[in-house]
Image 1 (tube, rainbow, N blue to C red):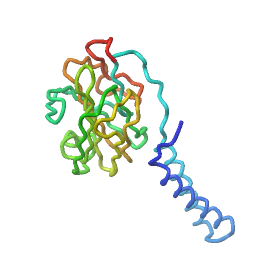
Image 2: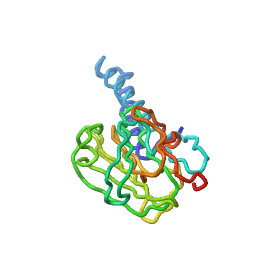
Image 3: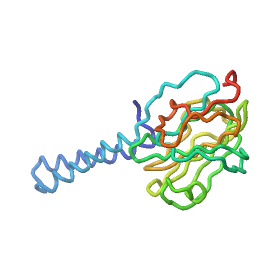
Image 4: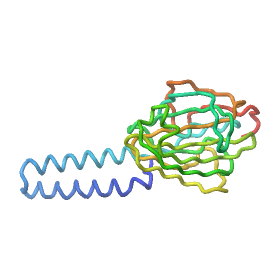
Length: 220
């Protein structure tokens, strides 16, 4: 288990504040209030360590599998139009609570052919309108079997989307591609002829849960 680099400042600041207030408390200054504050900073440090955790998942090795780009719960599977990169597509939406891993990983192997950032609102991430109205960052990946798009979407609490790959980068399935801070949503758009292997309500593990399969299994 490692820590996402984006979490270093949060952990460092809360840990330093916890240490400082515990020292003040032990020295006898501030009374019981200082102990309470020190305890709160300690809890905040533990929360930051938990929130920014970045586990190394065991990736399935079978060719043709599409892995979950995010950890959370599948809240929607539907056929939609995705005009920027995929066209008619199967959309799989995953909602991430603040307790889920917030690092995203590439669902397939391919080359980044599309990058788009769009500012927007901060509606609750599970709402249907979040896919269209909220701040979002999209990564379009070209594979041997078609185009795939991963869309990171900010939520009511999430106010910071980080996307690592640049256009032209080659991604390996399971590779880190970004992080969204403090509650969010990830939409995955797949070609219609790919077989969906998950259902609404399923829990997903980033980089290890299988969401779909290429129509030709011999192509990875």
